[in-house]
Length: 241
Image 1 (cartoon, rainbow, N blue to C red):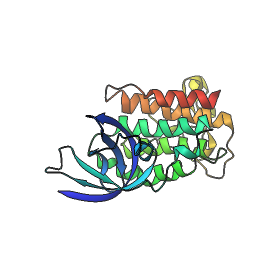
Image 2: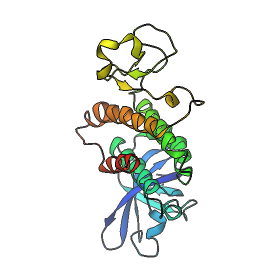
Image 3: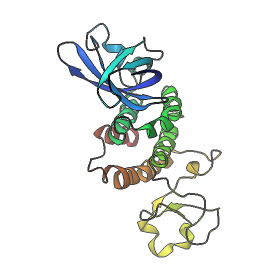
């Protein structure tokens, strides 16, 4: 069996003396792993940095067994462009770690996230843009995994304006003015997650990270008996600091 696809490298681990088992998110085949002979050599190592975009071919005897990757030169080596930007590096690490932790091998749900992930990673050099895109990316991941939030209307009144919070229990939007008795227990909903025209402040990004982080941890990783990836925690600390 064999197929060819575009991929985003999520990471890799050594195999034998010079081999590398590479994890990738592919456009059409979801999250996949494969062995790259000589992939751990000093000459080729930079090609397989997490976050790089590549074209690759997979071949193997059975679809559910570890096969072999033939990987072309990276079409986009992202890490090398942001080596002097710790926040951007942390973002690349968080994106790839979350995808590795939340998607199983062969999980084609990952294909729904390919374009969004490519778009986010293409913007990591734009310091004023990518933090808000990152929060939207996590919101999209929740939806792709079947845990999307309902931000269309107030859970109490049914109106679709003035939404300010999200219920941690239901994942539905709420007007804070309609929930004064328990508003302190709600998660703040930044306006940029409702309207692309809304301004984005650093405080909005932090609130957005708290919102998506809560549901990633409670609905995705808790159900999988996994902890939130440490790379994500490091990103939050970078952005808050």
